[in-house]
Length: 322
Ligand code: SF4
Ligand code: SF4
Image 1 (cartoon, rainbow, N blue to C red):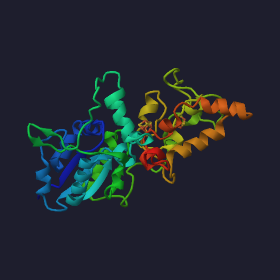
Image 2: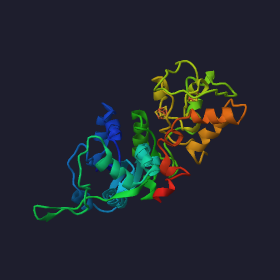
Image 3: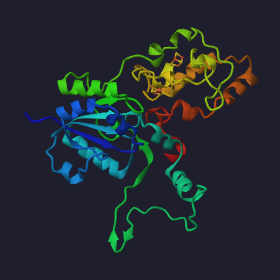
Image 4: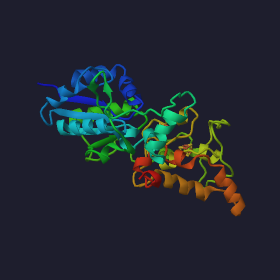
């Protein structure tokens, strides 16, 4: 019997999700035994024309990581959608917009200016920029066009399932692969991860007071959290109350507060405002001056509360770059 065909593709990503597949270690052999990998740009040399030549729906499942921010990525994911029975948004960037989605807090012009004019290592007196159609040695080339707004995968194509995490842990990847191969899938549109918050599975949960009181914010850049006490109760911004469980509490075990890569828990529309409301009600300010001082201690609120989720948040992007 022919094995099911599987594709891996990456859009705007750091490559960490590709590493996560390699991190399956010997389990990757079980995957390779059970499926035919027909596209995996980071590891195997398949071309666009190979995918175009396939029949619609021929690929059983495509795992697509990374946010979508280039014209080329839009073309690729639309092609993979046509050729695939199932599409899984793989990792935070594809699921929520992820770290590349922080670009929605500025504009593409600002990003280009920082990259090509302002960076201390740049010497570009003519203000040269990449051209969409440069002519090199008489040949016209076509470069992908960057968008002003970074998108989640499901803003561009229909997505069947979401595998969260930065990157998704190997155990969760295997759970998803085995469920797909066995045809034992949850309802379409599900996030393949437990239906609870990270706090509920956190080993520090017992030290989290029922009524949080935060007197001042601390940062891991300048002070070290005590490893045996709820980080939020110590004043470190921990996204646990506003984040879905399922990661194996990797950061907590590394003495780092959760940064929120698994996205909002079930029932929460917006991860940032969910944590903000928890923090605001825990602030120990007696008057406006104390409240102002408390708020000032929270460095980079948008980048912290929405580190992985600007494109899927109620902010979506700042107005200046509509
Ligand atoms: S706030 Fe953070 S440290 Fe505290 S219980 Fe929740 S996940 Fe654990
Ligand atoms: S603790 Fe938070 S940031 Fe760390 S892996 Fe888990 S969900 Fe992601």
